Length: 354
Image (cartoon, rainbow, N blue to C red; front, side, top):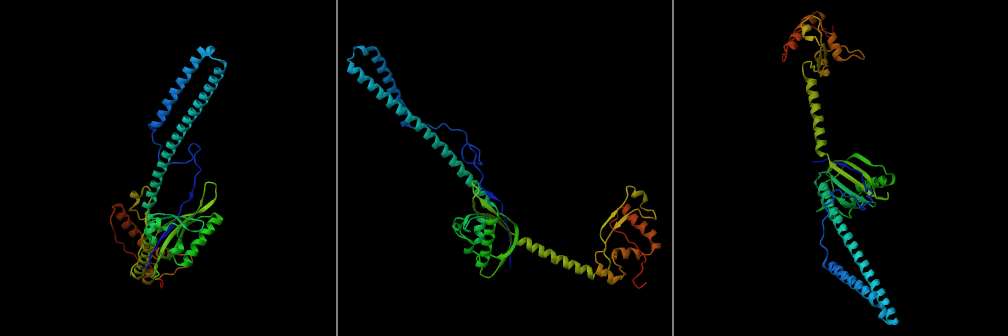
């Protein structure tokens, strides 16, 4: 049995990142967490505090007794204090840099965790959809596939399709057609939307074909460079089969109506607001929109002349005997007034032969 399928696609364009963190996330930011400082960080801070205290104490003691020192000792002491101050400044700068690096590492770790969660979310979404979703690079190699597409292609998993192309799954003429369509999209930037195709199934040996509706769009990077194409495919085999069954049913119904030995009318009846007061009057207040449904069968049963521009319904109405209208209007008015499911009317009419 032959099958039908359909392909759709939506634009896939990388969005510019917000200026704050350089990446756009879907999931909300987590509450800031106070992370415990590392032990070494506290040790260094304590050591720096001790050294600063000793430095200040030495400076105060030297300021009180420097006059008692020999001149050469004063110069040596000043040099030692300067070296100590420089070392303390370097240590303080190192601590500040280490603290900034630790904070940046923590922020990047949190951002990476959020990106991983969002990747899992998007992966869950596309793998849940029954449509075939895929993205290809400029050379037609698959970069992204969902589970439905992998199953349709006969692949063990979406990951196993990465790096492969349509030439690995479809007959070469069909794969060349797909590749040419994608090249045209990348060259012109014009998308292919809702393109129906009756094509061979992937890796079909018996020549089995399927209907598909396909949409493919251009995939651009952050700087506007062309990265490839993105597409979505939907199987419409059931829709095509239902349409074919409906056409067959309509043809059978038409044949039944044609062979029916009666004149079938169906439609609507319109009446004015005061139709209940006028329903039983000889002059009918209603407007009947009841076209004949089986014109061929009606012509066989009651052949009428049909001048150009005149329908069978018009000719059929004009063929009725005017003397019967009063009785017909009263019977039909009584049926409408009492909401009867059906009624019977008898009248004369003139055939084609007179």
